[in-house]
Image (cartoon, rainbow, N blue to C red; front, side, top):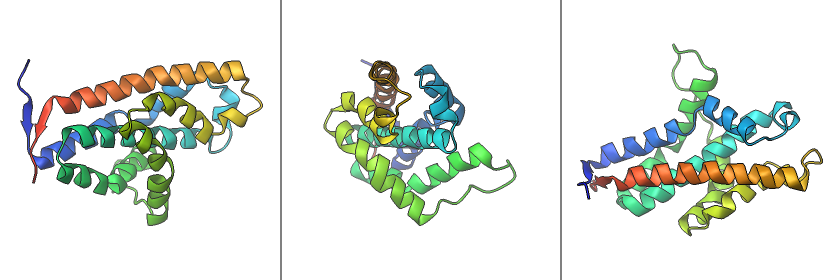
Length: 185
């Protein structure tokens, strides 16, 4: 077995942020949405794609957080969580702001809504090793289970495709964090 790479607490937080950023890029999320065969009409109505992206980012943020709970000291976990606003601001900047501006600030209300809403919904599932329930939660939170354009057969197909991608993301993030020995502050 290879020796784990030694990281300082700051490097551990940076690594966690990079894992979030790599798995939260809008173009990848859009490809995921269409690859999951979600009906195009469900993704093209106003606000639908931003909602899908926000929901995916909440899942990724919870995945990184759950990985840190397993593989990092509490100080690193807390440090990462304190950077939630920065991470969301960076994704907002990447999606719409010019390269010459600062990160788009995230309001306290929208940060609280993210943390108390979708992020809080995924955390118990990931922390209690019930990640197989994440695709159902994802679809329910976006209203796909109540959308008349999505039949039960299509919903099952969407959930199966999401399950496969979510499993890959969880495994990739947790395996990467397992390669590190992260020091406490």
